[in-house]
Image (spheres, rainbow, N blue to C red):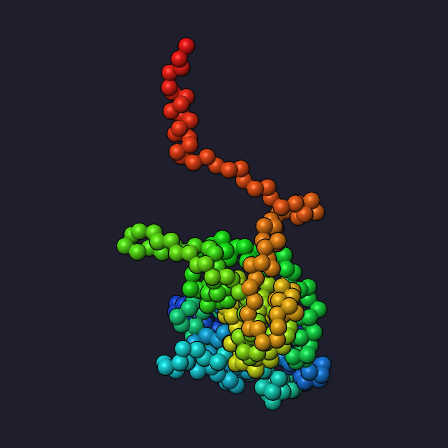
Amino acid sequence: AEPMRPTREVLAIAPLVPDRMNRQNFGSARLALPHGVAAASALCPGESLELRMANRTRPRHHAWPRSMAIFLGGMEVWRVDPPQEDWQYRRDAPLQLDGILASSSLASSSSSSAPRLLVELSADASPHSSADMVAAIVRTAPQRGVPELLAECLAAPPLSPEESARLFSSLQDRPSSPADLSSGAGTGGAGAASADSGGAGLEVECASPWVQPLLCPVTQERLKVPARGRGCRHLRCFELEAYLVASTRAVFHRRWHCPVCDHPLPPSDVAVCCLTQQLLREAPGGVTEAAIEEKLAGLRWQDPAATSPLALATPPRPSPPRASPTAVASVAAAAAAPVAV
């Protein structure tokens, strides 16, 4: 799915079928389109036809096979070359079919006797099985810009301070790790981290306070509209509009990834963080980070399973004091001593 060009209709979809030579990496597919759909007059202003492809294991991630040829009326009209050896990634992006189909005599001919137009694919999916690849031709809506995406994000429900408190509590309860720190979980904390050294468990406790950065990781400027992903496991935020602008300008396979943890993050999963908004209002202009433990102290104990007003309004009772092992031994010795009559 591409947020900038949302799909309006799936016109044809087909998996790659392994070839008859029993070569599992090689396969082909045939996508049939009605002749009227291929004409430019069949599309509304701004609409487009795209050829997209994905692996079944990652259905939301567009990716071409290792190499592929596309045929229209038996003639090759486009190809995907194998990636160069020194490249880790290839800039795969959906293929705009409008110009290819419009220039084809088969697509533009209204007198063609064939009821459907065949788009044929021949691919090498190595190192994957060709049966894992699925191709589709879709009709997309007119391209949306940053203003439309920004309005969509601002209209979504924000992340409440209570939601941030529950995330903060879960981050404190689990052992800290370099991944937590690099993803913006915090720059400190009272939780303990365990590490193995020569087979022995080593407890490491960090006494520095947890702070929330008030600078955007994209622009390195003070946040104005702080936002983060609803499913991200960190509290650090980024500037909402800066994230949208950067994603729309990025190459296709690098769009819509969280700038903090790099997880896939479409605009529909982005929300404004109310906690960071409060911190920004209270912090002076030159401050670049704010402590969050005191801010969340009254919310951290809340249990997400407790939904009744009484449960949310009543803090948990403190645990009764526990007797020390020495006191317990003294009581047991006194009970075993003989009683004088």
